[in-house]
Length: 399
Image (cartoon, rainbow, N blue to C red; front, side, top):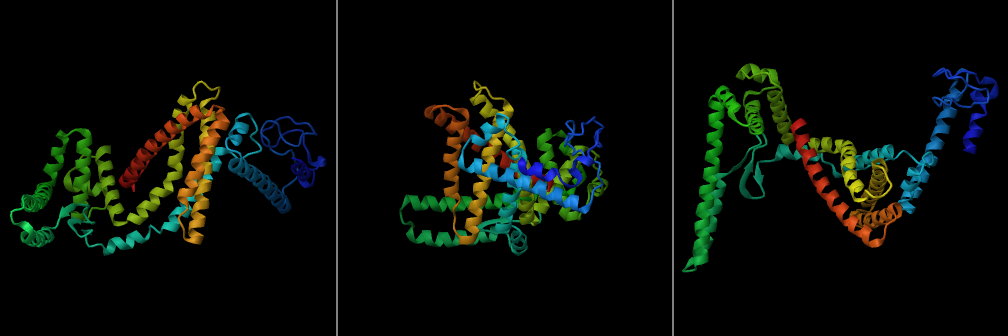
């Protein structure tokens, strides 16, 4: 604080420039007031100069750097201490936990996407011929359909039959395998026939097909509409919902617009998987801010007898999540420089750190802490899994 006081006694902060009324909010001031007690603006009537801007910039920078160093030191060296200090009112010393976590999350995901080069997937798709790992399954990147290559299936079946025939004899197990091959061949043909039949019904009379979806349940109808639009967008080169509505005499409803936009997003995501993944990852820092408050409810329930508010538990969650991102950033940096995989080691460090933080902040014994630690981490993993699924699914429908 001494450093700050030294800076504000010079230039526009000198005594002769102080006023008796705040220029920002109009609050009455004393000549001895360096700052307005109502809005915190500096008490100065001097016109701003370029030098004043530079002085204030470096003053703010030094102040933030000091907070950042103290926050990092407390986080890394004293598990649980920073939250205890912050909850007990020692807040000016440390950075804001919400802003700190958001900054770290942005930095980590930016580094992650840069190092993984997802954009190369877009180029790979243009070269993709539909084959899936040498299997008879084929994926059409234009329509998003998964089907069976009957020619390839028949060829693989013939090759397998030739090998099994030489081993067959009277072996019942080998004869059973021969029957299964016939079944697989028939199944592949059946799948292709069903896909062709469904698409032909849909596209032969698209207006009637779409109107018939009104009899379906809301969720089922919505996904059927998405399927309808994925086919018609490519076939008829539809670029907007209005164009589709006019062509197929579709009612102008929110559900229909959403289905069209979702189908369009899915087709774009299939054609540009790298760009889609990058777009989704860029949203994850904001997803964390919705995820952490939900997870904190479980911390609050587990420690409901403790004299902490929900916000106190949330601050504890944010601080620990910040430490996780710091460790992941360090791991990613080391992996990039030395071409190693250190993430497992840093995750183990975080696991131990989290246990120590829980013991320090909540002040309970080893057994209780271990039980709650296992429970909360299990809940965290389950919630994280569903959050990631929902995030990527939602991103695919809105890309």
